[in-house]
Length: 170
Image (cartoon, rainbow, N blue to C red; front, side):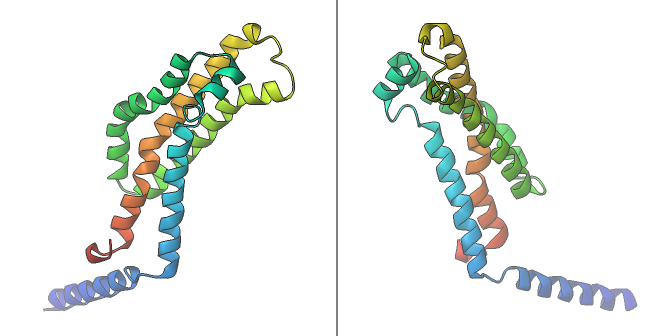
């Protein structure tokens, strides 16, 4: 009888805590919108160069085909990384893990992609032919890293929605 009553009290306490945790507050909507903005910014960084192909070709001395390849890295990376991202998104502490992985990849990839722009701003790439391997390497490496971040970042809003909102509130 004691075990049954303690088990019943434990279940009642769990249900009360669960109801408190599931109370929808404005802060939850704000956090969800921040994570959604994070996913949108990752998507925007994926097609930075392909949205202005002629300017990219002129700035970095690459062909239009290479600009198209920069965008294609997004789809290629998505199919390669998606199983790992799906596994991590369904594991324990998924939101924090995917946030850290996605943030680090997005920031590092964006930084690597910006190296050629920074070099041209300070005047070091006057001779584009001499620096072309460095420029191409930075652009492609950075774009691949940004593209790898995509599946981790895109999973966050839906995972957060599942954890924080009831089914009828999503």
